[in-house]
Amino acid sequence: MQIQEFIFATSNPNKVKEVNQLLGSTVQVKSLKDIGFTTELPETQDTIEGNAIQKAETLFQHIGKPCFAEDTGLIVPALNGAPGVYSARYAGPQKNDQDNMNLLLQNLEQQADRRAHFKTVIALKTAEQLFTFEGIAPGQIIESPRGDHGFGYDPIFLPDGYHTTFAEMDMQAKSKISHRAKALQKLIEYLAKT
Image (cartoon, rainbow, N blue to C red; front, side, top):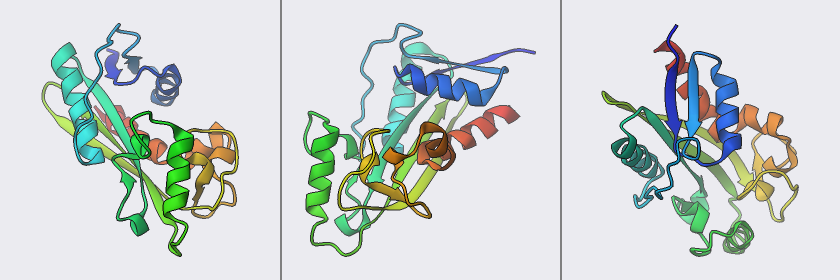
């Protein structure tokens, strides 16, 4: 049986390890670090899908091998969808999680509607095709941070049907319901069929 190899547009070894565990033995995923790729991939699109596609297509142009990229954002309807595609740099280019959370909480102070959802889009690029896989995690923004696991907006995001924030959950619990896990599951199901 031939092993398929894909490059994941991330330098985070934990993300790659998680994906490889889920994929089993017929598909192998490598990180940018594994292949010595150090060029920064652009994220200049105005949608989450656009950024994922842009990163996957740029990486494919550089390496000519099947690859995939992901982009994630937090969408708050009461703030017209903000922070959305700008989630990582909501409070400025320094990309500081605490600053981003503080600004979001400040902007929601006068809002009764605190619904929100995380959205992840994974773009898979091969020589023949481009596919996207989407994962959504609905919930709401609580008034003050809780928990010290996770990253980004996890301490203020309470997923629907749960009493614990993403930052209060361990990785195993979060990975069953997270936006990234849902998108990844769709990617894995697709790869398992090819």
